[in-house]
Length: 305
Image 1 (cartoon, rainbow, N blue to C red):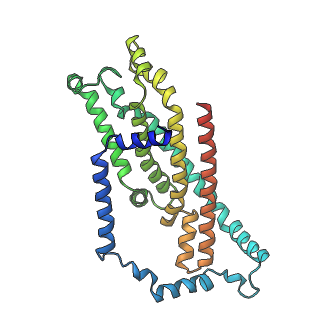
Image 2 (image 1 turned 135 degrees about the horizontal axis):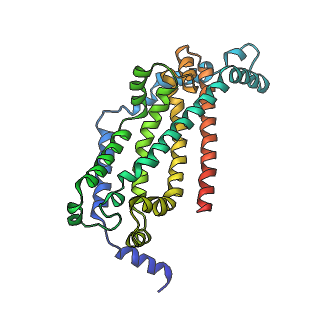
């Protein structure tokens, strides 16, 4: 029997997951219902009025207003874009970047402290030893209750979108960069805490259990055993969430923080769609730069592991 037939036979004989098949069927039914229910007018997207609006936007609204008399040229386009970038774009992009950095530093610092409290393997009365439900019920109650409460807190922090947090904080703190920073920090704290706690729970317990059997207590076990094992993974999550912060910092600027999002909203209100597209392009370039830096850092961390 050749290798391909062996693989095909193993594929046929593998255990079938009824839950997976049922989930796929339910998802397909929901997609079909969305198409035929009439709640979304799919054909309306391609009506004559919308196509005409699209043509006008491309041919007229998106055309740089300052170049309409002299005509479009590469030198003129670069000069127009460079003047706007020097006047408003550079400072807005820099502020957007600083908002994202401040937010992720706050979120990462808080998560480094709180994530172990949400890891049930650490918060057992006997860390990495007690696993059965019967043994957990015999544990000293505050430890297990604290872990459950902390995990619920993680859910609440990330359940509310950044935009809603920013609206609430804007009413309390007034128009400044802090509502955007704290909104991003709160939301990403919940995400990093949950990811960090799950990473700790999924560690290979054999080495940690050996340390525990040698008499290592909770804090020495955490700093001497758990931390070195989860640090590289936590940094991967940290830089991944920083990419998201760069994107969201641009969007939150529409609330009044003088970032790229602020100037995007300002240009839209004044119906200067040429400037709006330019600021959108600046935001995309900033996100691309953040993605490249994050990708490089994550690749370096993987090689160093």
